[in-house]
Length: 196
Length: 140
Image (tube, rainbow over all chains, first blue to last red; front, side, top):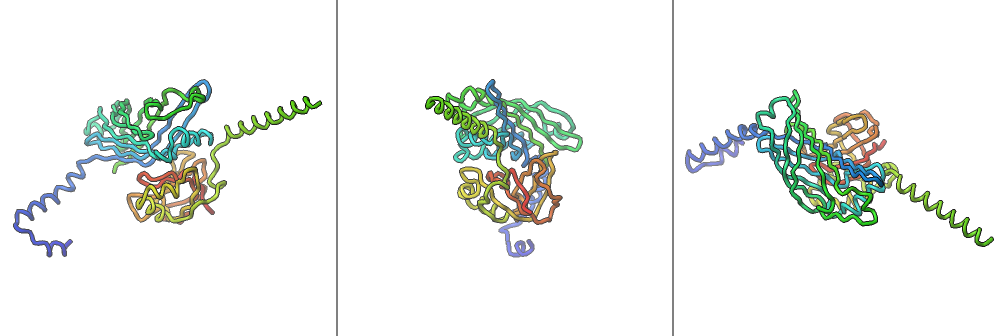
């Protein structure tokens, strides 16, 4: 750093002042952003029919939440969904989700219903999440209710439950097994964030 | 006599077919110990492969069907998440990304701690912030 300063010769003192001011503001700008992240979020989905119940779990979901702007994103690897039965997992990956072609599911959106000041206080807050959900390469807008919990230590947990129709995302289900899979799949998202 | 023989044979075939279908329907996913090891490499090499060319690394290490890879490295962290889930993160030389190995059902077995050397087999599922391996087993 010292070497760089000695070699760098600004054209005038105003330039130097501008650079100094910008550098001084960087820590303040960074501290103003309240960001939370997790690498071990949990997404579970449930298909319940009279023929059979299917449950898949993925406990390696990554998510970032910016409490300042409300921006929230998460991503999940399709092949990281695990099932009780291997055959369900194979059909899920090969026949329905085509995970070799579409290896990830993503969500990008905004969380509203809780202010930045409330995020600093312990409590349970009912929130709304709205954004774009991409599954099987098809992006659809989605809005869901959820709960944001801030504990005494400032740890943040987010949960939400919503329904997804496979056909909305271009997932074709053969008629011969249509009665085995629910028209609407219940999805539960649980994210235990740590402050970045 | 011939009809009786045919009926018996048909019944036998049907029983075998039903038994096979029942077995297929109910079989659980195999352990990484019960599958051949497709690739052996270090955690640093694995992350580097994904960050250099994610598509090529996905083809090679994730594969079109489940496959086991064996990864060795130094443990960055061990996170016990409940009774049946342990996440072991291997160092990669990149502070922002690691190789996360998920152990279920108490399979982590060892009393690992950060800084220990580890060799782990698991099913590679791809790259998010980290490279993710599931259904892992420790290699003695």
